[in-house]
Length: 385
Ligand SMILES: [Zn+2]
Image (cartoon, rainbow, N blue to C red; front, side, top):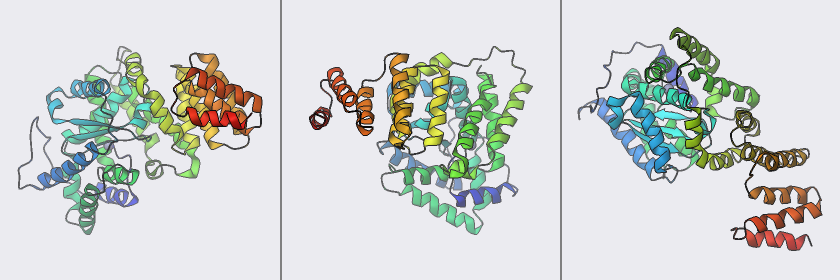
């Protein structure tokens, strides 16, 4: 997936999409490039990036979640299962990538946005297609003999050497060198859809993840929050192509969507992902993401709480009332997170409603007697006396 690319890499991708590429055979299960080949060089550079990401502190190593995603990889491409290493990276942006050596990344912002297992399977299938069809080496051979090729190599080796690969700039640098051409993107969509359908998933779900992204793009307007949203105009076209490809497969409605399974797998992490999302500083798109979760109806108390948090953190004049509205909806919708009372206390304090602020902070300390911020909240209560 060409999801995060620098303008340089985008230019490169546009240039290369117009060039003829020498035919490259699909990779075979267990195959490794021969030592002397240019492909081995690409594997070495990306292997180094992989090692840095693995120790960056950003990888979610929860066994159950990893097993869940791995299982999807193995169901889509059983014979390549052992060749793919999948990393779940905690960062609040929609992204997935595939390196030539079988190092696949799925970012937590994507897991928060997918609505069911079928949608995730499409993404995984798309990334697998880049690996199976050796898009990276094709891309490399197209550019290596140009002056751009040298810069490309410098970016690759530079990114491999970036600090601990833990900061956002390093993550983006690493992800951007896995940018593929438009033709490769189309091919990966076609093959990814084929893989998911063959594994029994409902291919009509593939376009739906892009429809949600279009909603986010519309909400972001011209603010260009994400490099990908700013440089990748093809989302609508992509959604349309996937819709017609799915229609050609004449699904009779028996395809597996896996909503229950997906929701259960993500549930233990959703609050963390939502916390990252509301702190990402992109109000308009985060609001779309949370509204979709509220509409989907799973754990609405949690979703409303984070909608309230989104308003509280933006902190405009009118946001205080909206925050309180969503916190109240959260309490009405079911068991809400205890921190809701701390949040309510802060908003009431800001709006000068001292009595409610005191009551909310006291309720928070009653519900979470061993809270790590107990001393701080107690000091707020003292100030409000
Ligand atoms: Zn792709």
